[in-house]
Length: 539
Image (cartoon, rainbow, N blue to C red; front, side, top):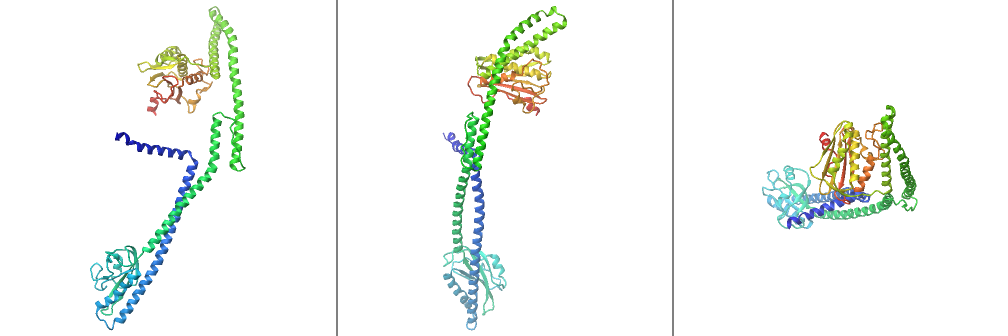
């Protein structure tokens, strides 16, 4: 149970990602709004960072000036006290206590801590002992670099530090701070001591945090407002474009009367006017083409039917001449044979024209039955054997060794295969023609492969057009009419199948017919590849 439910969150995430990517690809509005929000976020972040840096620098600079001045005042006052006590107190320890105790007391009320170092000349350190400092203050709060700097007599200096405590310190909290160092000399022993004043930056940190929160809230609000404005602006532009797309889709579906509503006189209104003019011109031209196509189909149908009667008369006369050709002189006998051949070709052309007219009129119907495609292919191969021998080529059939059944019209399927094979014979150039048959549970397919002149780029789609020829100067040996592949495509469409072509110049061509095993069944794949395996290997 757990293994079957585990993939569901991943599936939902995958579905959400696909939907998001689909919206991103299809929606101009989404991309514009997202781009605007991203750029706005970058700009606002940059401006906010700059303002925070300026605010921080201003707060720290002001704090530094104040604490340095205050430390100088404390040191100056301490020196004054020492000068007054010089004549009465000759005890160095007592002078140290008189020096540090008032400063510690004022620090508890003014919000700073203090450390008095051992004498500089003795080389003592804060960590080594002998220092006097505010209660519960950690002497490690003084940076080692600053302590090292004041190992010799120096002027006042300051630096940033992190204040550490071992317990509560009145007016001072742990955290970032400023340490100001200055030196005094005791009159009792003439030794120089360093005073370290530690001022916390708690108020500045709180002020900076408040400013940061305000800027962050303002930035979020600004980005949201920019996103809303971008959405409204793009909506005014995208909405007419979407409407134009919907109208264009309906026009493409055949609803030629659809038009855009024109409001205003701006660029979008002029675009809508131009679109409507284009649609009107297209509608007029399409109707003209439809009328011309209808007249053309009517002409082909009428001519085809009208030619049947005179062709029958000519056929009867031609048969008489052909049967009596042995009594004629050689030239007349040859003329009778040529007449018979051209009459056969003319009848084939007429039959194809009539078939095309039935397709155009929608009168073509299927007489479906279960058909073994292997039998159809072998029958076509036998019927075209003589034609292949005239072209010094062979038709080779490769079947799966079992019946390949499909519900189809055997006459039409056989006509498709025959047209493909005779077309391959025309272009095989004495090389073999290979016919393959295959089937699976849903589809059945036939491929006809030749190794002749092949097809150039783009010709695989044009080869099924009526009367189209890859090389108009090339002679037809099969007596074709130029309508065979077009009729084959129409027969394939009646079955709901695919008829596709592949070819490369000098490598030959392959035509593939794919049929559903049952009529009205949709096709999703073919059991045979369209691109020949031997071509893929050579490539």
